Amino acid sequence: MKKILTLLFVLVSMAMFAQNRGDWEPWQKTSCYSRISFRLKYEGMNGEQHQWKVQFKNDYPELISFNYNITDKLQEYTITTHRKMLEAKKTSPEIELFTKEEDIYLLVDKVSLSPYPEDFVDCDTK
Image 1 (cartoon, rainbow, N blue to C red):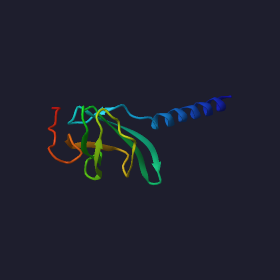
Image 2 (tube, one colour):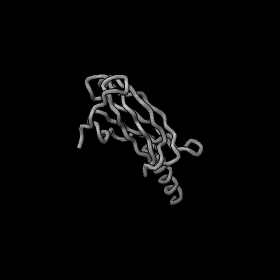
Image 3 (tube, helix red, strand yellow):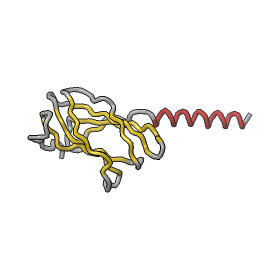
Image 4 (cartoon, rainbow, N blue to C red):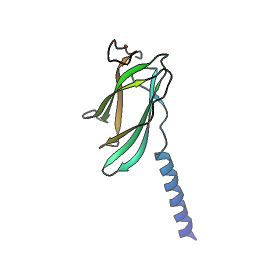
């Protein structure tokens, strides 16, 4: 009976852990722009790489474009840099990422109130 209870406990614990790993993290404001938020979702290992999903949310009243950079935790290696355009008050579709490291850091910069990388908006957080 003890073995059955122990096995049941282990299975329930594993199921709860698996559910939490596949959930979206809470929305976070970017370090420089209070009207741009992001959230991450860790999908687990895919071969030798960590699989992630990211979404962005635009709280500006107009279309924006911006760069986003994914780096490792120590910010030694840039994993990816992309430019993203996002309509006013919208959330982006899921973007899939693959990384070598499990700990990653996301940076948003070069925000423009147009689809073009010009006339960048100043950082609004201190």
